[in-house]
Image (cartoon, rainbow, N blue to C red; front, side, top):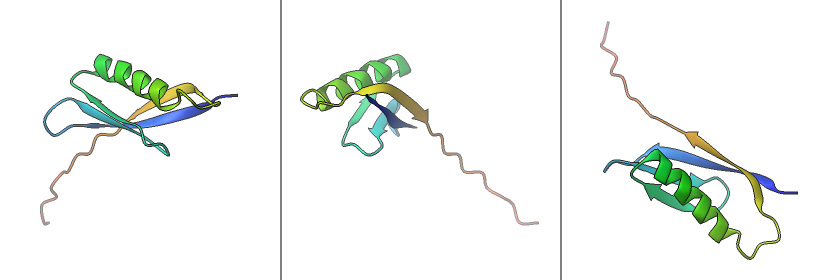
Length: 73
């Protein structure tokens, strides 16, 4: 039975996105969301190419950080 693989997605400073698999050394990036999805699937397939266990599901977890200054009262 396969596992669920979770990727943390963040905005890249230069534009686009980068993705990092939690618990595995899989990294990729892309300019668009559609390209990122394709790159994640390709990177996952290559990473598990020789493995007897393959993910049955890939979850993309988009994380967006925002800093909001708080004025002194």
